[in-house]
Length: 64
Image (cartoon, rainbow, N blue to C red; front, side):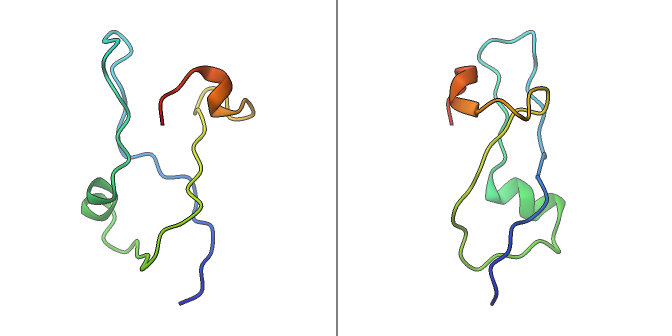
C-alpha cells in the first residue's frame, strides 16, 4: 500500500456558542461517513483551522 496525503477531512462541526464543544474527526466518524476511505496505517496527521488555514494550529490555542 502506497501512503499518500488525503484531501482535508471535515466530518463534524463544533457549536461556536458552546465553549466545550469540539470538532471530532475520529477514524470511526470518517469511515462511517466515507466508507471508500481506507488507510491501513495512519501517520503524519495534520490539523488546520477552516477559517485560518495559514495560521499554525498551535498559534490558535487549539487542543489537538
